[in-house]
Image (cartoon, rainbow, N blue to C red; front, top):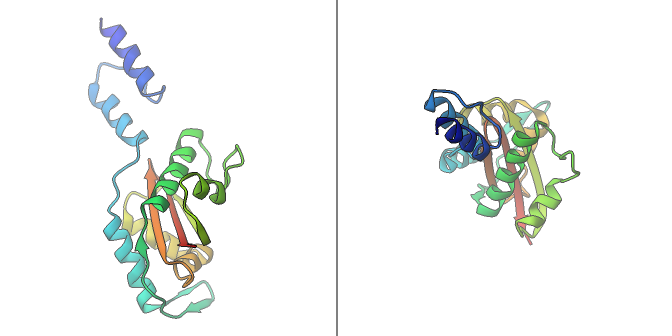
Length: 168
């Protein structure tokens, strides 16, 4: 019976965890492989604080820009991409199957006039990932882009995706 239970759990977890006598290991692996709850308000506050004060990205100073709001469709597209990176073990804006930000936004029916994306790996908190993006000239420029009016962030494991956009 225990063997059947282990096989069933392993199948449910899509092979992400070897079956062992320790249930905590299986539960921990299951949690990591699913989208992790992020604090959207913390992320939004961190981004809007920087946008309100202006900042230097690499060698370029960006003056203050308007605050952005959270968008559930951008969050869904971001979570989908983080999940894809996690499940297929890659780290890129384009998936091995050729999926790009454009196709991800089309899939969630986010009709945009402008859009951008930041990705990160290895960070365990909202504060850490925003600080890392701000240290990268291109990612920081996305955060400070006044054309963007909305954002959404998704995290699976330690794969993070931040999507920005402005709806048509």
